[in-house]
Length: 195
Image 1 (spheres, rainbow, N blue to C red):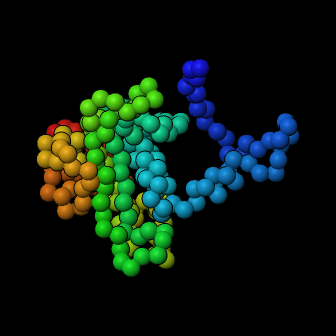
Image 2 (image 1 turned 180 degrees about the horizontal axis):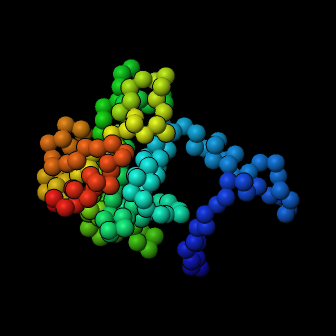
């Protein structure tokens, strides 16, 4: 039996859970708050970074798609891969985390399988660093606590074709733009123009 793709519809936070057509006393926002309140945790922080970049670029996207070959596409057609890292984690730490971002080439996901040649299908990477180093005041919703490093995928492919991860020192040795939230669009446009 072949099952077709299910189109995702944007959910409304107040939508109640139901049992036999009766609304229960908890709703979707309760689930989201339960599941996604730890914004510092790696997985959630990564998705939050995608959302922040999307908003900075003025991209209108109603639903995040998990399995797309890149994270966002700008109005100009630039395909963007977004990665995040932070010095502070939710768990107990002996010291700040070493900053590293995933850049490994991957096989495309098509027709329920990974196949083809490993590539980096984006035009540009945005490395989102939650740079704040105070546990008491860290808050990923405060956009001044983030720094963004933008690198053309072309430079990654030329200089680091098989490399799986990249640290800050290496990023800073490549042609790149470092910016705040306010300047993200300008930074991406500059990287794309220069590459």
